[in-house]
Image (tube, rainbow, N blue to C red):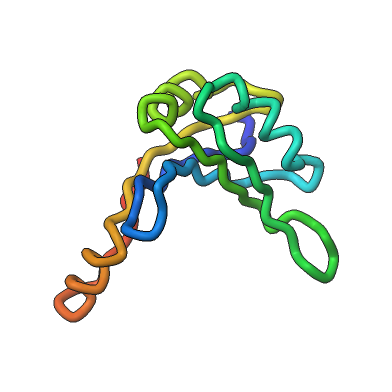
Length: 116
């Protein structure tokens, strides 16, 4: 099976954000903000695509984020972009608890991500 960029959803709004973000992992150095923007801008509530890069070398750190204003576009993009796009993509979904939930649970147990 060909290994390509993997997309995982990490979510919904916390009290500090009002957007819905898809975490894009395993990105090659050739993937740019513009490539992610072209892939996801067909959704009307698309806000931004950002590939995270090393400040010294400007090489990708292998991940980025795509943001949406509308949760329906967010869900639709996850479903429709699975296995499509300008590169071989797999979308894995995992929901992050809110910051408040993490703080509340941190004293009782370690909170982790669940990915499929």
